[in-house]
Image (cartoon, rainbow, N blue to C red):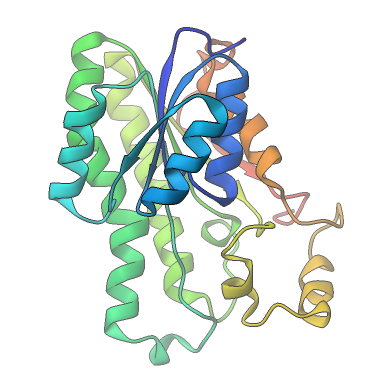
Length: 242
């Protein structure tokens, strides 16, 4: 019960890594808000763990403000919602694809900070965790602007950490390798045994990351056990970035 008495908001919490974080946090005693653009899926996961659901488009300022009004300032904020474009040469990514990737993966962190950081500073405590990617640490060809968006998130994490530390707010990031989530097919281009084998050959531990892996890492970084840790980017990647 490492998170007993704490409240948490997990964006993109209805599936994939987000759902793994939601389940772990609930098991550790937190009251969890499952924030997702998919209202039905958010409600289902919230019901499963005894949490609460809120519908949000993290790329839209009005929607994020509405979420903040409904949920109040949490002890823990997880910026997990993210998307990618299909693998392709950088010049072939459309402007609409580029704008959507940057809006969901980068602008969302600004919007949630604008919504919740003032309350955390006033309270003198808080933990923010941004779910980045190994793509932001060691970019892969043809995921160009997705790589860049996650690199942005890593730099944003460090900038937030150094600014908010005096206010008692810690900010860290996770950098998972691709996992068994709805985005896997988008990363691979096509989800075939051959493409999976090719990708797995780059991960020394020899498996994809699982939602539970992210839940365990997130729980540590957001717990009081990590009270001296801020501005780090923890690679949850089975050795992929070595």
